[in-house]
Amino acid sequence: MEERIKDKIEEIEKYLDELKSIFPEEFENYKNNIEKKAACERYFDKIMEATTDLAFFMIKHNKISAPEDDLGSFMKLSELGLISKELSIKLREAKQMRNFIVHRYKFIDDLTVFNTLKEELFKDIEDFLNNIEAGKIKNE
Image: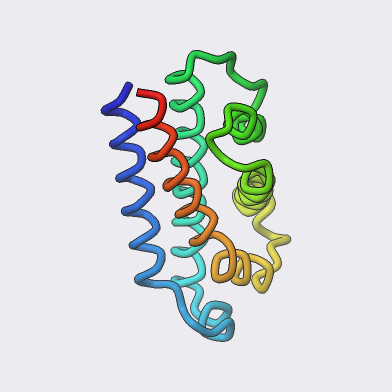
């Protein structure tokens, strides 16, 4: 399990770095470049899926019961004290946005996605990884 946790952390870090390398500074560049927008949305999808996987790995690692759904995984980590309640809410909201993008793509608000990525995702995922790494060491 330890190796899977480490591998998943590295996977998320790789996706974050790749997203940062292509993410435009300005909304107009995001909105008007179909390929860049699609790539950013896909990296967002990959980051959130890998983050959810990592949450479940940590739940299993700590030998607690699994939540009913993906969104509940972040609340379980908050209950364990591995992440704050505020961060668990932010991650749940990011996961919900990911689900909306994947399943309701005709209705995506590009500005909301752009702002979420630019202003929240990078910081929230980095906070998540730092908390998980600290909690993993504490629980070993």
